[in-house]
Image (cartoon, rainbow, N blue to C red; front, side):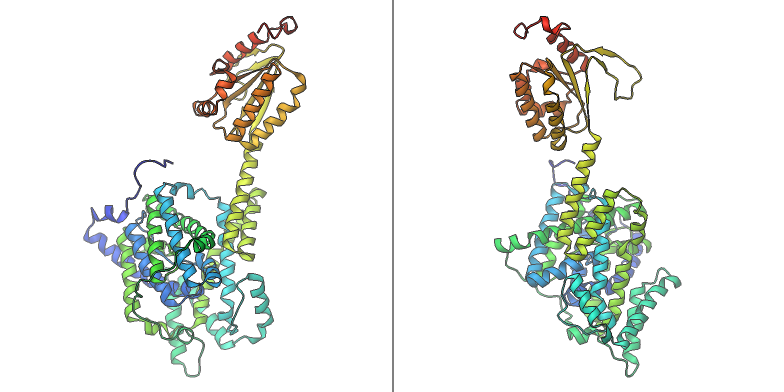
Length: 568
């Protein structure tokens, strides 16, 4: 990772157009039309489930999808609203309103652009896998719970956003099921499940919406709540850009939510791009992809849209239908725009229970229960992170889940590093090959009064405390020389430097010499900058243990009682 140098912004569209052809356009056209049709019901469903209108979902897919394809770093990425954002968007709207959502999305876009500008695209991929699985499963369960009201036709209003109170309200009203609505939902669910068995190329969600909407509209006496009943006549004009109030008070209140949107969007987009690269053999520019995603999230709020990210299912649909350049993603946005202009009156007829069935299937596919089952035999620490993230996502919210999941993962990681960092003590004899792969052994004789402490691993705050405790336990022995062997220390932090400084000063006060051995170049620079090398003396910093032992033996001759400290 290099944080310096020019900005890494090279959109794939520009390089793709440099050697474009009619054959590629034909493949992209077919893929773009198919993906646009597949994205239609999802954009509508995600918009409604997020607490906004179907129009907002479509606007987000059109504008966001176009920008992601035009300026992103992945050749086949399809951007738009996704199920992962439903929970957080719903909660932001509930707590801060639509303007709060616009501010949070805008700030999230700025964060994403900053991540790309500072070349942190590769770092995002290192988010621990148990955290990703945990919050994805938690989001899936939360999405499922939000659809029960429409799927069963309970007709409840004022549902609490919290998981447990919501289910309490469901259970207390379970006898109020509208069986006609429930039947339409079950029929929709059946069509979605059966369609892939007939042909994997057919979009089950769209087929279900078309068939069920036709039946509900044509059969006399069969009436269930539709999109038009809930939202009225949907507009067919792209809304004019509008501003929002960006004050320090709003920034402070919404920054945690913006951070969550940005991190979640980065993870989902780069995960989608990585999966796509594995199928197509292409290579995504992670930093450009983050900048493209950020641009989409900066622009979309001005049109009332919700957060945009890369969508794995739509991206894979694009690939499977022949899409290989960003032109397919742009065509997908154009197809959605044409549907928005000319077919919105038909959208009004779609039953709400049918959309609920679509989202229930989305939730099932997101749940990753097979992955969780396969991880049961993983280390307990990984499972702890997974289930904590899952529980916090479901019971509280995604912001807390990501923050606590990352914190726990960091703590467990540090504990593992501490457990794997060894501190060994040698006296009398030292095999310089001990702890290495070489078979050539050379034993050095270490005089009485000389102790060798070898640190094997990173020397950071946790290990520094461990080393400090070991040194304190040996203070009673009063050696003449302490050799600190650091050949296997890849880096050192400020806490370790402070502890080392304290050790050197206390040792010198007691007349004990400290010799540093095998210090790597980057670690030595840190010690020089902190003044440690001047404190211990540059001649007491040796590049090899042989030199360090020779110096120590001179400082502490074999007959230590015959030699006074003053003569040294």
